[in-house]
Amino acid sequence: MFLRSEKAPFDSMHEECGVFGVYSSETRNVAYTVYYGLYALQHRGQESCGIAVSYNDKMDYYKGMGLVSEVFSSGKLEALPEGDIAIGHVRYSTTGASHLLNAQPIVFTGKCGKTAVAHNGNLVNTKSLRDELISDNAVFQTTIDSEVIAYMINKYSDGDILTGIKRACAKFRGSYCLVVMTTNQLVAVRDPYGIRPMVLGKSLDDYIVASETCALDAVGATYIRDLKPGEILVIDSNGLTSYFMDDVPKKSASCIFELVYFARADSVMDGQSVYDARKMAGKILAEKYGVEADIVSGVPDSAVVAARGYSEASGIPYVEALAKNRYVGRTFIQPDQAMRENVLNVKMNALRNNIQGKRLIIIDDSIVRGTTSKKIVRMLREAGAKEVHVRICSPIIKHPCHLGIDMQTYNQLIGAYRNEEQIAKVIGADSIRYLSIEDLVETCKCSNLDFCLGCFNGQYPYPSEETDKYKLE
Image 1 (cartoon, rainbow, N blue to C red):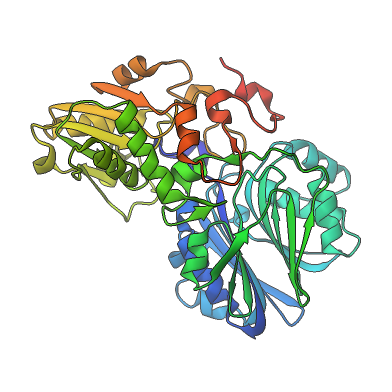
Image 2: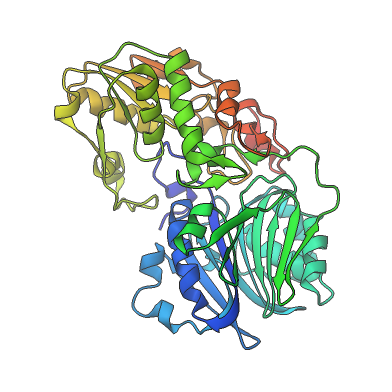
């Protein structure tokens, strides 16, 4: 597995994690429910995963490196005990190396007895919190902020998990959705800005919490609602009890890239269909930034819906231009530099017969570094495309993100210093056009929340402790 510096330089952004939790009305194989929920959330993290189960005032867990199906093969899932509460996690690292020690959930024994924590997001004040805990003689086993979260909850607890969570959350700065499990409670937490998503569902008498509605669908649960920003939802033998953090901001700041790229197209987030948002993006691109062409296509998978929207609005036929190798994950290992250079050819290939001699519009959700876009344009030209026009379903990314997206410095961003014409020249396209910020917000007009647009305009709900990384160089 790669450390951060060793990861392949794909244009695709990576969000940190997906979380899932179940509170059952009876003792059963709750680990299986979590397994299928994590399987549905696999797109949110492919480096590691884990499941923890509460049973008979005890707790057992298993976690490992790789995909859900790989980690829980060879009887690992069956070895977990029956229980009535379970949580799970899939991870892509944005803080902390890709290593088994950093896999989640974090399981420990503290003031509330056996406790497990799984986290999706990224704290911006991890260093100061870690220093505070170390001064209290805490010993850390990992390099991730999720362990800091777990220790902070324990530190501020008086034996009641709710008290610990409320006091700890008052100290957190950044994005976080948490599932916290004790031997008799399941607690779901969404940060006060609602940056990361969390939904609640029900299956018969069981309650489910998850990062996306697609995970509810995967286990046959009915969607109830999204957690509200700043909400702490306690699920126990008394049913559901909702609490709120102090001083929840009046204006939310949900990450808009959940709708652009991270989420599965069949999910609904805070009232907004991901599919509808992406299709609208394609239509707006056609209406405002159209160009004469013979065919339109999308970079698989997240841009395909937008490409179909562009086709419908423009009347230009939608034709598959790229075939994707679906067995190559985001943590695909390249053994040497030669393979790193060749990775796109393994991950994607042009459909020569579909594009030869054609003027092509290729739709993508975003461009981060530009490396993959440049290779795709070259691949399409080498396959015979007469013209290649690129249309992007988001604005130019001008600023790094410190709230859970793996784009850390200005030097990583092709758009930090360049306009559309310059970017087109770098990647070798005949033209490139992006949605404006106003266009993008319009595609998500059905959302119940406002959005964080920091990677486009530099306005984040939280500053970072590591400010030097986020200064324009």
